[in-house]
Image (cartoon, rainbow, N blue to C red; front, side):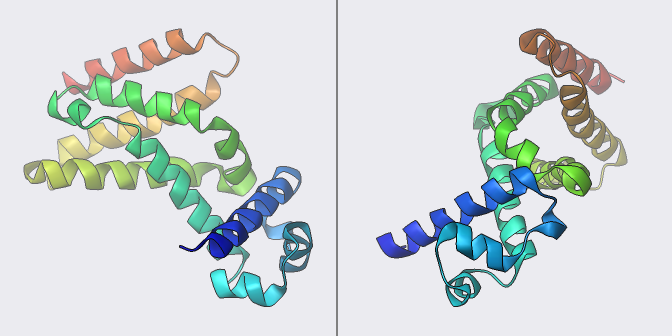
Length: 175
């Protein structure tokens, strides 16, 4: 990507984040985004189909950052507690963007997108578990549970919350 394209992408994304911090996704217009980013509408449309396309692209970036924050060795240890711990730290590292991009009606999308992405990574490494109902349920439970427990425990000691979430994941695996 050349420098001009990169600067334009950054301007669009920064403007979108500023607007989303104030408004629901459905209320953000291309016109105001372009004014905020100081670009023409045609420039926006050369990058994205619509505001929802931009939102999906930014959500995908956040999901990749979170799942990418889980070291490869975590999957090799066979410890779902370690994966869950790293996942929760990933949520924490992206919390500012999560709170903006996945606010309101978008809140539940993140947990689903993370689950989908992690299962893809895990099942690529361990294809024998892909059709295993028990593993699918355990993974869903741990991923969704980690996200919602972390979100619901704001204001609490982060390390303690992460420790509890990891311990629960480890116990669920033993069932």
